[in-house]
Every structure is written in C-alpha cells, then in structure tokens.
Length: 123
Image 1 (spheres, one colour):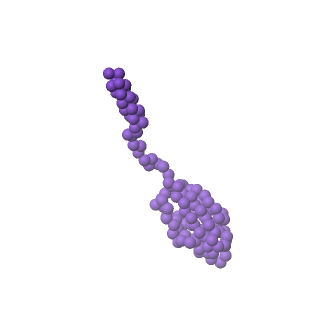
Image 2: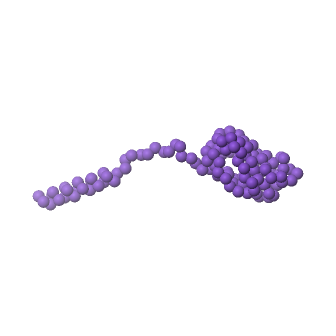
Image 3: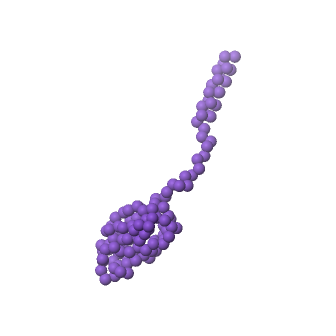
C-alpha cells in the first residue's frame, strides 16, 4: 500500500510541476512596436543612385554614402514636419510619416548640383 501511495504521490507531484511550467497563454503581437528600416542613399556626381526611394512609415535609419564627390542631403519636412539633414556621408534616424518628400543635395557639388533631386515615398 505504501508503494502505491508513494507512486501516486510522485505522479501527482509530476503533474503539478508540469502544470506550473505550462504556458498556454499566447501574447498578442505588439502592434505598436516599431520596425527599424534602413534606407541607404548613394550620392554620385550630380545624381542619386535612384530617382525614388520607398520605405514604410515609422523609425527609419537613413544612411548617406558618397560614392563619388562630396555630398550632403536634405529630406524636406520628412521627420514630423522637420527637415532631415545629413551633411556629408553619415547616418541618422528619423520618424517618417506617410507621404512623399523631396531629397536634395545640400552641398554645392558642381555644375549639375541643382538637378540633384530624388523623391522619398513613405507608405
């Protein structure tokens, strides 16, 4: 009788431990979590590597790479109504709202400087 009681007690203990370790709850995905996107803009002599860049809204890491020449950029009113400015090659983080914004070169880079324009579309 003692053996049966000991086995039942052991079995009960195992069941209790298994129930305590069980996690049957599922946490909903955090819809407010921000996705950190990275946008790389390459600046070449008198042009950008793309005429249009597309990123989702939210926190975005913007990286400027000077492939040729010396450039900086201004993304007009893209960060909650404020200009995003990168002087020379560098990286910044901005909170981008949906819309379309103009990217211009901020450092005079030669005869084609005024045509150095691209678009940023935030979805």
